[in-house]
Amino acid sequence: MQADTTATTLSDIGASPGEAWSAIDRLLSQAVAAIPRLLVATILFALFWAVAVGVRAAVRRATSSRQHKNVGIVLGRLAYAGILIFGVFAAAAAVIPTFTFGTLVSALGIGGVAIGFAFKDIFQNLLAGILLLLSEPFRVGDEITSGEFTGTVEAIETRATYIRTYDGRRVIVPNSNIYTDPVTVISAYDMLRSQYDVGIGYGDDIDAAKRILLDVARSVDGVLDDPAPDVVVWDLAGSSLNLRLRWWTKPKRSDVVTHRDQILQRAKEQLVAAGIDLPFPTQQILWHDQTEATDGDRARQREGWPARPDGNPGPRTAPGPPPTP
Image 1: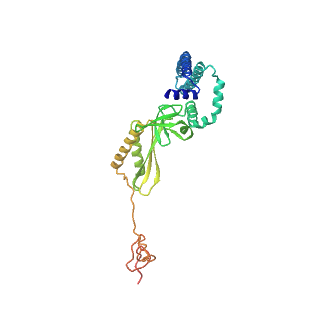
Image 2: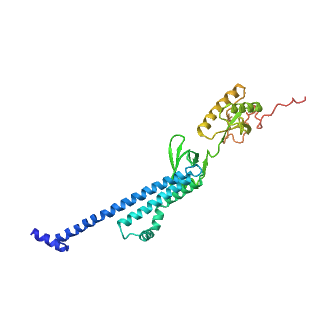
Image 3: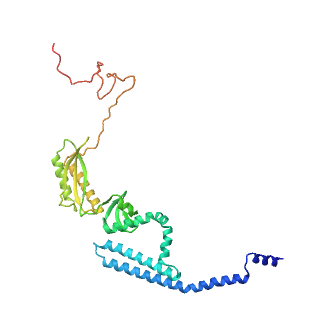
């Protein structure tokens, strides 16, 4: 009974054991026949890959000077990608003889819009990276500020720029952000100006304080003589008269911090030794009773003056001469 059921099932699907084995044999034969084509495709792709690596290295060596280094990087990467694409086409044609470039274009045309939307950010970052490498607004080793991140540029890739922050973190910023948003290149020039406001008392000698601050700035090794340090009166603040000390150094971050530390420490010591006051902000609080019971009664209010003993609602005035008898 079981044998009859099996025969019926094979009959229903229109296949016999012999036909099934024939189909499997044909598949195996096709797979074995495809092995040489697969080997040829693998060898072709390996050759194209080797040529791509060699061309990229040759382009970079030919443009190894600092003036053309980024151009070499861009051209090398484009040549590498182009040769690999041709290698993929050659390998596909070796495996599938009917495959042509027109077939690929037709296939891409069908889903081109969807692919464009899916890889929009990738293409945008790629184009921005190429433009950054060609225009060279900054180079590897420069110190920049991009958005909220400040540090040293470690690498400029076609997709993103790598920044090492001063506290030892690596930040990967998409090139599209760097290309479209403002970027501060701290080390673009050979020198960088720093400044600090020093408050002195209103009764202190301004010229003497200026001389002390200038002497301090000039005494620190690494502060440039040209442009020379200078001091200007910058603000008449509520508790102090502020002098702005400005000096120039090399733009390297470590030098800027070290020089600032030395200047501020020596400035404080020298000003105090010379008797120059360094006042800190002070605040005076006047209590003003403005309740409903006392509102409008000047004799009970406290608006910066005490109430007069005689209950006069007006403020106290300076005593005048005694009345003439």
